[in-house]
Amino acid sequence: MAAVFAAVDLGASSGRVVTGRLGAGTLELAEVHRFANEPVSEGGLLRWDIRKLHKGLTDGLRAAADRHGTLDGIGIDSWAVDYGLLDASGSLIANPVHYRDPRTAAGVERVHAVVPPARLYATTGIQFQPFNTVFQLATEELSSVADILLIPDLLSYWLTGEKGTERTNASTTGLLDPRTGEWSAGLFAELGLAAELFPPLRDPGVLAGSYEGCPVYTVGSHDTASAVVAVPATSDRFAYISCGTWSLVGLELDEPVLTEEARQANFTNERGVDGKVRFLRNVMGLWLLQEVQRDLGLGLGYLLDSAARATPGRSIVDATDPRFLPPGDMAARITAACRESGQPEPRDPGELARCVLDSLALAYRDALSDAVRLSGRPIEAVHLVGGGAHNELLCRLTADACGLPVHAGPAEATAAGNLLVQARAAGLLDGGLRELRSWVRGVRTYLPE
Ligand code: LFR
Image 1: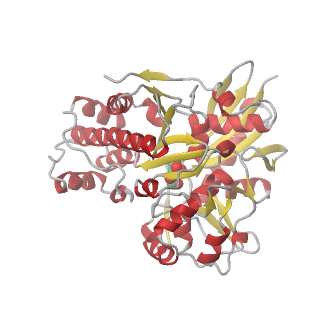
Image 2: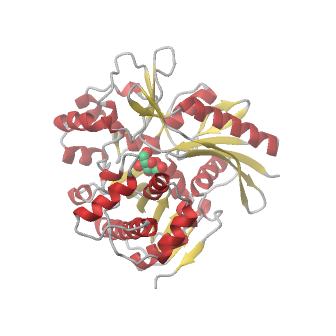
Image 3: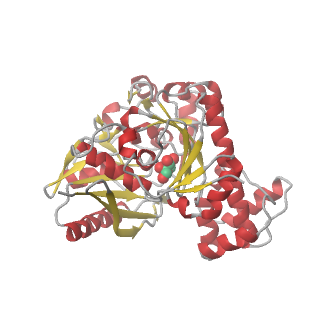
């Protein structure tokens, strides 16, 4: 008999509920609900409208149940680093602040004054990003806070009444020891943070509670961790690009790489499902294109068609530059970056989009060659998963830039990884990541030219 699981996947611009029907030898995915994620400005800060997301989630679960009858499990993943603060009565104090809000500069200074960057990296293995939870927390007034819940853990708490901190996402806080998978007690002490503020750590793939009689499982609740589960690799010699709003570019390793070179190269050691290490670099990703689209009021199809006709490699920007982090004025910021580096300014939307795509492909190439050099792990192919797998031009440019075959797809890797970990937790699948990956379908290969 088939079993049906529901994956709740919250992205920076939309959330979705995807069901996975596990039948004879196949996992059939269906998107049953999609809802907008529109940040709000409150108290001078950019925030997530978390109640609206919660409503989208429960509406989606209802749609899933309407379609399939009963559900065999629910799992929640979202972007990383952000959190809600609860008071002693268990109520959310305010909407969670968006990691793209520039409030964190002071937090970075405060943390680095106590724990210098090199020691912070040696302790946690997490790349410097101004929005890491550890820096966000240094800007908070925590005296009336009883619990800190990461976004998927907060929504899971609202569904089940149970509190916990899922480990893959906990690693993105910049407070976890990558060698043990436990909080770094020393770091908490040095920063004057009480470790009890986070509910107990829990692994992906355990029972978190229940919602209306249906089991809720932890999954790789950091969306990137779930996406990496569904990379359909058949050997160890692969790299991945999880390509959505961000592009997360790197390798799956067994041990963290905590060298000074890895820090200088801004590589992170996030925790993966089954205790793996996601050794990767954050590249701005489709955010650049989404913001150009929003800025110019143009459709994606039009932009990509014109980019395909534009001169290749006319100007390149650094797609890891934090100047592109905040929303707004993206066309102007990209044009300024070209001008400042003495390159021709894009003259039309097609040239602008081409500049973004060429820059992404080169940033992928650089990240992959650094990853191989820093880890000593050779690679034979690149798996590009996530929404970017639909972007043929980007896939082609990536294959050419990297000089490696790019296996593009599945686009819904995050939901697939979420569902596979649930199915295993429910006892319907067994084995390791290799076995889970064998259920993943939907790949198109681009060979370098
Ligand atoms: C991707 C992602 C990245 C993380 C960024 C901010 O959706 O989770 O992995 O660095 O969002 O949370």
